[in-house]
Every structure is written in C-alpha cells, then in structure tokens.
Image (cartoon, rainbow, N blue to C red; front, side, top):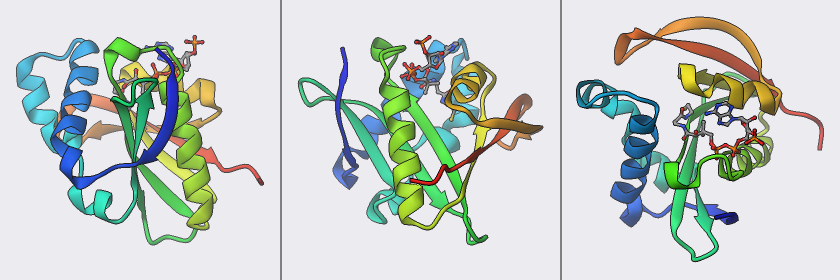
Length: 158
Ligand SMILES: CC(C)(COP(=O)(O)OP(=O)(O)OC[C@H]1O[C@@H](n2cnc3c(N)ncnc32)[C@H](O)[C@@H]1OP(=O)(O)O)[C@@H](O)C(=O)NCCC(=O)NCCS
C-alpha cells in the first residue's frame, strides 16, 4: 500500500487519526497502561487541525493511514514536530517519509529553519535516516520512564 497524497486534516476525522496513533504506538510493544499514560500525546489536537497544522497521508483508496502535526514555537525559525504516526498496516511503505516531507514544506512556509523532534525510542532510526541530528535525551513528560531522543532537523534551502 503506497501513499497517494498528503492533505490537511479535518476536525471531523480527529477520532480516526487518534486511533491511528494508538495503533502505531501499540505496535511498538507498549501495553494498555502505557498507552493510557501516553494518550495526551497521541490524541490529535483539534486546535492544530483548525489552524491547518495537521496533515493526513492517504492510501490509494483515499483512506487515512497516517498523520503529522506541527506547532510553531514562537522562537524565531523553530518549529516543533508534534508527532508523526503511521498505521502499522502501512509501516515501511514510505508514508512517514512523505509526511516528514510535508513537515519540511509547511515549516518553510512558516519561515521555519529548524524542526525540533522528540522521538520515542522506536523512531530513532527513522529520524536519523531522514537526516535529523540527535541533540540530547529527555524523559517523556507523560511517562518519565520512557526516554525520548531530541533531534534537530535543519531545513535545507529550497
Ligand atoms: C516511525 C514511523 C512514523 C515511521 O513511519 P513509516 O511510514 O513506517 O516510515 P517509512 O516507510 O517512511 O521509513 C523510512 C525509513 O525510516 C527507517 N525506519 C522506519 N521505521 C523503522 C523502524 N521501525 N526500525 C528501523 N528503521 C525504521 C528505515 O530506514 C526506512 O526505510 P526502509 O524501509 O527503506 O528501510 C512509524 O513507524 C510510526 O508511526 N511509529 C509509531 C509512532 C512513532 O514512533 N512516531 C514517531 C515519534 S512522534
């Protein structure tokens, strides 16, 4: 299954997108208790959808298979990647890479120069492969037993 297009998310599909994030995280081996603790980070943010900062990756049939959310930080040029989540049924099919390409494109439009990423341990290879630089580690605010890797991605000139 390939990604056919990436488009802005709609408020009426928020629950569906949150379920994709839950499935993607469950696939990494987290149990129900961990998923409950992570929920504030998995639940798609309606305000970000309304602001046009959430994007959906569709398969060839037009079904939503992943999403990506951005948040401007207010610090010149620094954009926060709120998350990228891909339905496990479509893992390793390029959906994550397409969503990250959209993150770069949209960050540029917001005059972004660096994308800041807090990566769960299972996504470190994904962000490294995309060219992000690891700059540190920090406990996950919603579950401090999990150490997140902090990455910075420098947006190349168009
Ligand atoms: C991380 C995630 C977004 C990757 O999405 P994806 O659509 O599977 O990624 P892609 O197919 O674009 O992968 C691109 C490359 O990244 C690397 N990669 C992706 N997932 C990987 C994994 N689980 N282990 C090792 N490398 C991985 C590979 O080099 C891959 O290229 P390849 O398949 O040709 O070897 C997805 O697995 C996911 O939703 N994970 C759970 C949620 C999460 O951790 N999100 C990120 C933190 S917010």
